[in-house]
Image (cartoon, rainbow, N blue to C red; front, side, top):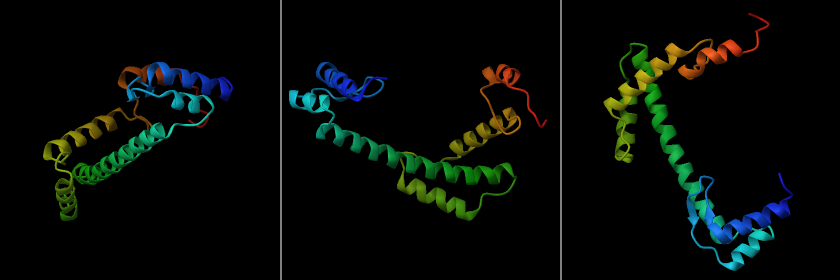
Amino acid sequence: MVPKFIGNAMKGGRYATDGVTTYYGDDLLESVNPWQVLTTTVGFTPAEVAERYAVNNRLKLKEKRITDRRKDIMREVGDAMRAGKPISPASVDKIRAFNREWPEYPITTASIRQSVQSRNRASQRNEFGVALNPKLNDRLRAERAPMVYN
């Protein structure tokens, strides 16, 4: 951890040599002009960089809304299937509406089947409310602190 003014100077230097990159080193902006480097060095975010962050943030937020909606519909259908109940007409309508709106990311019979199978596997691995990575499960549970109330 460094003082903010040093961190800003380091960021300005990175912008000058590498351009603006993501945490993983992917380019956000390939070239940065000297004015943008200077404004970064004194603590401001260049407008072009701020705009790129805002656009990326909006895209990821929209993606999350879509995937969350899909996940909710699949969970609803999966809960019915796991309980041995038929899929409700309301759920079928939700699937159809979602697939009409997002044909490039449809809810299919195969995706529902895969989701239910994954949930069943996770339930089988679940011990006392938590499912751990099977490769780490035994060691983590063996190394945990003893419980007071059990």
